[in-house]
Image 1 (cartoon, one colour):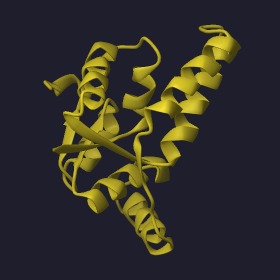
Image 2: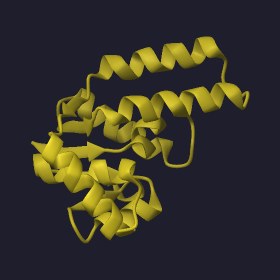
Image 3: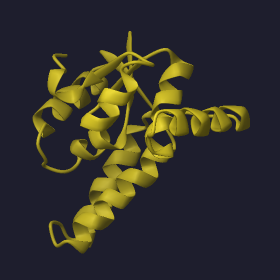
Length: 143
């Protein structure tokens, strides 16, 4: 079974209409049909929550809608990648060496740990990670 580590740029598109949401819907359908395994560090929960908070704050959705969407996201039960103390130090190292945020670097490290492909809609992360781990841009997802 194919394993994808999804970052927040993909996970938020499961819930909100943005560019490439149609591709995110294909990923979600394949996951729900058992065609692939989705993994992510627990960080994704906080990043998706923050995206929903911002959507409420900016008036795009109501608080009730955000809570409903967040509940649906949590019910997906994307398989968590637990990272050790040592791995967190390695994340910081990769982050500094690649001029990438610690958040983005955590997804790269998670991908290293599970041996999957990083799936992102973030152009910057895509460019930085593809030299280290197998990486697929959401726009190129075919199912």
